[in-house]
Length: 338
Ligand code: AMP
Ligand code: MG
Image (cartoon, rainbow, N blue to C red; front, top):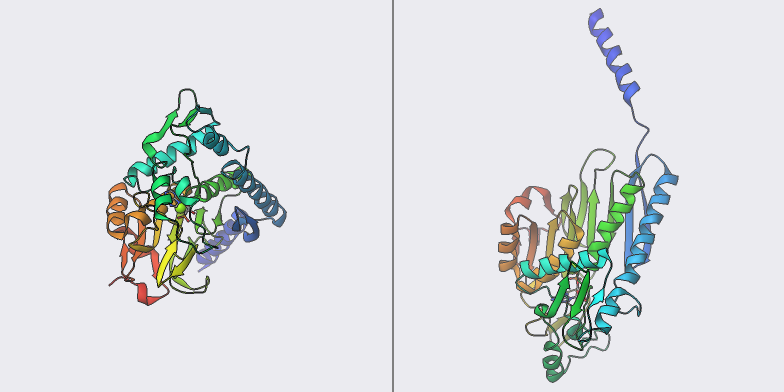
């Protein structure tokens, strides 16, 4: 009996000696990259958490300017201004993004195409106007990944034809989640969640040791709050591309912002496409490109490459990579695969 009591006392002392200061989650929101950014971190100090979150916001702000083709003196703007004229010397960071974009272009069989800029500029969703077919034909001639020359030895990027335009819109937010996580880690934060609209990256675990859980929007609900499913993430990123983000309706047809480079028109087949992978730059680019390819080809590519994902087609049928089943909870049973 005495021995048992002693053991319990010893165990309690041990627990007490090794106990860490209490961990909590801290969260801040900011309007960056033309959308809502939410950063959540696990920390033992509100002060430390706030300083780290503010540093991650500053990094996202820096990238908002650096990666925009609207900002005149960004490297992307310089590449576009020099199209058909001369290669442009770029920073290691721009080179890295361009190489990742090239990887995603290959993986999606050309469906993700960062030279899509001339087509993107024809679509004005506020004006609700379908571009003239002739204008689309002209713009399509200025689109094509084969006309991008990246020279890693001298760190230059060259668009071969005048009028070409490099657009990082399909990949920049995911890249920014990666960079923001690096900044948080450099501030000694060991767990957190960075979310830039539909692009989210998690690292570490919540204070109770459980995995981070992220909601995927119901693609056909008018409320942004309505979820279709919740997925668990372990040191991973998740991105969802959907036809509900920017669109207008005309004669019952939805004209949205993910453009098939082969036609210049909004991609058909999928209405929501989610990718889970270790890096945000990959999930963001892939979700956009695989959306264009449609659910069936998307699932095949994800299974083959070892990434994970969920796709919903126009008949609201759900497709999912096999390994994901145990980490998804269907909050709207209508979407649960049978
Ligand atoms: P996301 O919301 O991540 O799917 O990205 C959509 C954005 O990516 C659009 O607003 C465009 O700027 C860009 N985009 C649209 N279609 C494509 C495409 N086929 N390849 C690459 N970028 C695209
Ligand atoms: Mg994307």
